[in-house]
Image 1: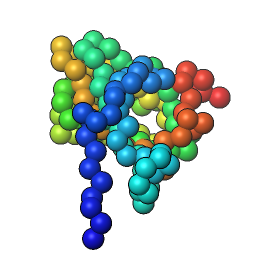
Image 2 (image 1 turned 90 degrees about the vertical axis):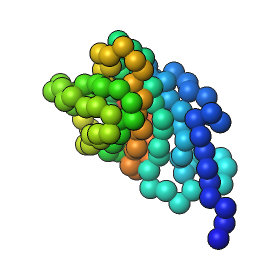
Image 3 (image 1 turned 180 degrees about the horizontal axis):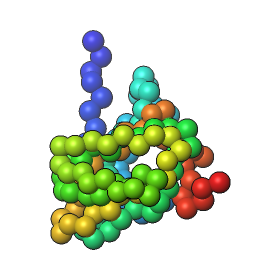
Image 4 (image 1 turned 120 degrees about the vertical axis):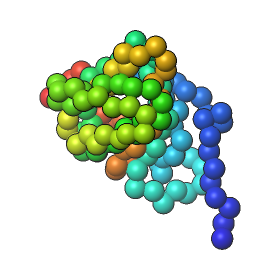
Length: 128
């Protein structure tokens, strides 16, 4: 057996991405490094207290947000759904989505995208 691939948020920076969240990409099968036989991408995401991401959609990929810490409202096609630590929410392909952190602590969640996230699949504020 080969050694497992272990990655942590301390090893990769959180960068502000197009939807205005702080994102640390942990696993993506198309990035340089050891081959990952993985049908999704997985990122660790932070939304600061009182902030929200920009409305966006993934044209062909579905997404799951799994909340690690905090409470939020996830908006999918203009309808809000409360979520909290220990819960996940499925976001279908093509849905306009964003997440709002009304709390006083940083919201932390995993964003799992299948098929893996691609820049050309994501549209920010342009829903054509």
